[in-house]
Image (cartoon, rainbow, N blue to C red):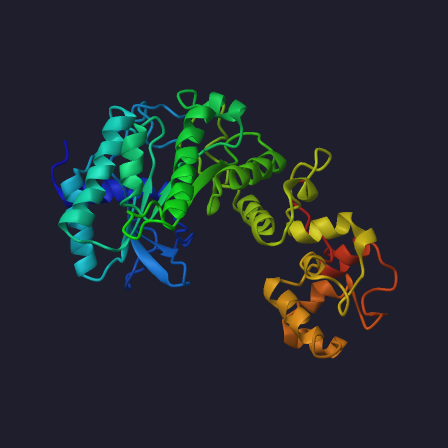
Length: 411
């Protein structure tokens, strides 16, 4: 058993790097003899509601796990170095790091040690020590352990800023295949409890001044991408359902990193599907801020996103009859659907139109990406894109195929 807290920190900070649901950086620069090393885990970054970037101590409470999920490095059948913090050690480390100005908060996740209640109780105890004994008011994000006593989850929610339950895989079939000890029902129960608790807190706050806060920064979740054969359509449908059912702040997508072998898993030589992860984040953005729904972005005939063009552009190609739209007349919701026009530029267009008509030369200054938008808009009735409008022609303009191809010496 490892006794030294710093040795435990090395193991448990490294084990936490596979959890992306606190928006950590994807940089992987090695230390080349200078200052800093982005590979070593331990500190990650999140953003507060006012836009500030805050640094968090990112660790697991333990990597002893009773579960045997196929995709997980910490599964019980893996021969990896194990360690487990006590609540007092995590609280002490957090305070010491904070006093040295290394961090501003804590991201605490955990494997399932012994059973869900035992693990959740240790998480609660850690937060209690930080909040009540050390007077720590910094940001704390903790993982909720599915299957734990609802009272423990509620008490932890009164001390944490954000809580999250990792749904892990987008479908029941995938969960049964790779994590048969988990069930969708057990994962959904704490999500529903946290959502109800947040709603109840907001309601009761109207009548009581001194009411303990409950998960004021909301809840989030994470899905692993690429470990199973689930399509992007399935993933984005599950994402939409989670937003609508539990009012989540974020759904994070984590490109599967092959760390285990198994007949149901991709081979160890498989590259993490980072571009697919990126497309899903773009689609997630469209769901949350651009008034799209999952069925508009993909359908059974095209269940995966185009790797060459972003989801909004792909939607535009499939709906060419909608375009071009007139910049000086189109409603805000339609402007948001034009490739090259974002939320900020759409709002600027609406404001500017209240003063005077917008000219074509003015569009660049508003912030519109004309390289993409010009194919889908008219300005004062004039079209500035190609004369022969069709998706293939636009694709060729935006991403021309190379005229020459490098031949392989082995073909």
